[in-house]
Image (cartoon, rainbow, N blue to C red; front, top):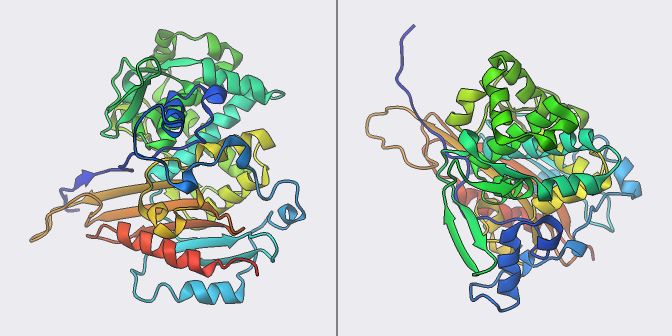
Length: 418
């Protein structure tokens, strides 16, 4: 067998996204939200938020919970002929890899579904962090099965040191000082500390890979120690990873993020996550089984959350809030048609390059793999509500503009109820 030298360049997501409703500081303790609230109040001079990013906690709800439509979506429906035909018309001139699931749940008309290669597998990239979120919520429920409030308080009050799991990732995170109103962004260092809520926020809002590893680490510790988790010191946590056999660590890591997905009816061949998001964390917790995702699996995830069917209503609502975009939007979410819409979003990319005569690799232009993925819940003030799971692997090209273009064209397919 010939040995081929391959250069790997991996980047899951770059941009300063922000998530969670901006009036959520008192509820979560996420200091970045206080910064945004002070911008809206005029206390800090900065670029104002777009209209779609200004929803408050009370304005975010689960559209399918407690409705007759909820029961109709325990399985994804058969394609709607008109919506399917309209969706198909968007792809003749795009790369064959484009795969998508689209679900229109706009009130006042029947639920409509359409898809293209919905079962095709892709490397999920940072979209996989949604599996880490579900894993954390599941472990919190195992600690306090009868009280979401105790789970929330644990997230808000537990202060966690980054350590080697939190580095090295080029994605910066915000550090806000409420006393001085000073906000800086920099890479995470091993000595940095944040609350568990803030680590989750860094994982989703700016897609920090180190933060995702910290959250994954803490979820593993919850599974391993139960209620004793809340009393663990940093040194005790790290001793666990030093003394536990590597195979046991790999098995535990996969179980923590896989069990919730399986409970949603998502099969292993539809979505699995087997590798930590940074090389440093991967040296401590070895990979197992690889990672894969499909548009159909991502759609199942969104529907389950919107139904309030994962753990309980409060958990699903909180997961949706953590996906709500309140800062600059990128890729699919950046389309101008969505400016006034509430967008609940996660994007991810991963590209690999190998030597090729006459070709110079660049960001998001991998010639071996070049994945770009997005999941989104779109809610317009005119009543339109729909879900999208979009995945692609277009080599040698940054697909950002094509994803943005598709967002606008898909949005036009979902017409308001007349």
